[in-house]
Image (cartoon, rainbow, N blue to C red):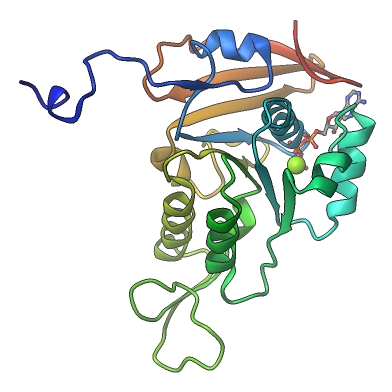
Length: 253
Ligand SMILES: Nc1ncnc2c1ncn2[C@@H]1O[C@H](COP(=O)(O)OP(=O)(O)OP(=O)(O)O)[C@@H](O)[C@H]1O
Ligand SMILES: [Mg+2]
């Protein structure tokens, strides 16, 4: 008996797949994201990260799944408007409760707990966090084991400065642990600065997630590329693929 057979998993057995919302991407990923995985969608501003999230959510809604879109953009209305302009009609799903938009208020001290409660209680199978970057850049006050940002009035605290490695690491780890639960497959976006070679602005999340999709802009050639940089349990090419954004969203060329 080997380490896998003891838990009932055959060697080389492929995990069930969760369709991404883009047929060609599913093909590149042997059917889609591994279920119960977290995929980071990284890219510079305007590279198509949010639109990638729209495809992922639309696919979930088509399949009758419950979805949640966590956004640090206060104006949920604008996201709905952007989606509608690209042909994604999320309004009826939002009205029926199949899709929840949740504004992650970065000024609130217990945002992690609020996110966790909402995701647990709503029993969402598809979770999008767009974007991880501002959450990772929050300051951290350590108080006790579980709360990395204590409730107001807490006195027994130690503060790490904003943007310090321990602070960022704690936020990213906490978010990853909230998202990595059974029956949940998540997509998180991360901004990378223009010209940067790293895969996220926090430089840590790429090591903690199961998959990474990199969206690139070549402004001089007026081209867009999508690269699968990493995907757990999946044989994939590292070759960049030409894509374009049209009035219907992302299309492979
Ligand atoms: N109808 C359209 N036709 C062609 N391209 C479009 C259309 N709508 C949006 N785009 C392109 O998509 C880009 C926006 O994509 P998206 O919002 O997904 O980027 P993002 O990576 O999330 O950006 P940010 O980092 O600012 O959040 C626009 O800058 C534009 O280049
Ligand atoms: Mg965006």
